[in-house]
Length: 94
Image (cartoon, rainbow, N blue to C red):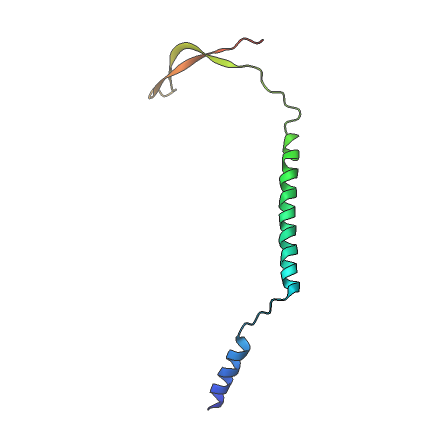
């Protein structure tokens, strides 16, 4: 066998990937996965709390509209399109 062939065999032996799975690696993977899961659950709890205070100072409009029973024709500013739409009236406030 030539020295080149011996070197190739040695390189192939050194390059083989042997992964030994120990209990420490398994426990570490479970702890990492549990931490990521816990952070996700925490985010699901915190996000609704933050978003409820976004519109704290805004008062909703109290105007409600109802169909009046009639229809009206609406034309766009260019005059190219025309549509027939419901005529709306403001509903009475109780």
